[in-house]
Length: 363
Image 1 (spheres, rainbow, N blue to C red):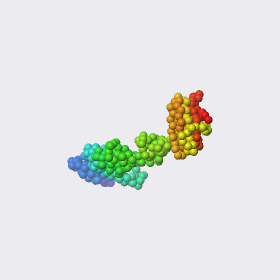
Image 2: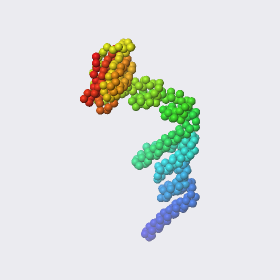
Image 3: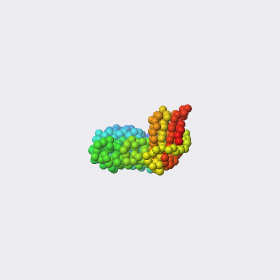
Image 4: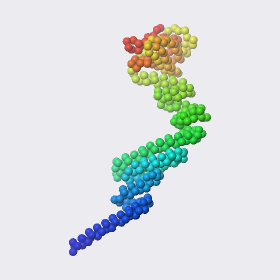
C-alpha cells in the first residue's frame, strides 16, 4: 500500500513538471508567434530564469538590431544579458552613424545627450556594485569599465564632429563657440577655418595671452619655442626670449656635465655708451664651428651666435650673469660660469685644443 502511494506521488510530480514545462513552451510559442518586443518581455517577466532565456534575448536583439535607440533601450533594460557590452557599442555606433548622416548641430547635440543619459545609468550600476560587491565577480566589474570606455570614446568622437559642423555653419556661429569655450584649440581652429576672418585680430590677441600664460605656468623650453614660432611678433616675445635663454642655461647647469669658465678681467676698450650702465666684450670664435653664447641676468638675457673664425663685439647691461658657451658639435663639451659685469671692456677668444672646446682672454 505504501509502495503504491509513493508511486502515485511520484507520478503527480512528473505530471506537474510536464504541465509547467508545457505551459512555458506554450508561452514561448505565443511570444514567437507575436514576434515583438512586448511579447518577449512578458515571457521574461513570467519566466525570468527560463532555460530559453538566451534564445529569447537573441530574438529580441534581431527585432531591434538596426534601430539605434531601440537597441540602447534594450541594453538598458537587460544590462546583464549575454554580449551586453557588444550590444551597447553597436547601439552607440548606429546612433553615431545616424548623427553623421544628418550632419547637423542638433543631431550631434542629441547624440551627446544620449551618451550623458547612458553615463548616468552606469553611475547607478556602479552604486549597485558597491552595495552588492560580494555578489559581483571581477568579470562583471571589468565589463562595466569597458562599457564606460566605449561611451567615452564615442563622446570624444561626437564632440569633434559637433565642433566641425559648427565651424562649417559660418564665422559668427564659430566665433560664438570660441568665446564660449575659450581654449587654445578653439582659437587655433577658428584661425584655421577663417584665416582672414573679421575676428582674426582679436583671436590672435586672445591666443597670444593664453599661450603666454601657459608658458609662464609650465616654464619649459618646448613651450617657449612654441610661443615664439606661433607669435614671432607677439606681445611677449621679448619676455619669452629671456625665459627661453634662462631655461637653456638652467638645463646646462642642472646637467653638471660642463666645463668651468674662469673669471673675466677688464680691458680698455673705446665704447660708445657710458661704462656705468653697459659692459662690452670682444668675442673671437677661433674654431671651425658655430659658437653660441648665452648670458642670463636679472634684467636681461641674450643669445649671441658667432660664425666660424668670426670676431664680434657684444654689449650687455651691467650686472651679474650666468654664462653658457657651446658649439654645434655634440661631442664638444659645453662650458658654464658666472660673471659680474661692472662696465668697460672685456676680451675673450674661444678655440679648440686637442679636441676640447677651450677659451682664452686677452687683457
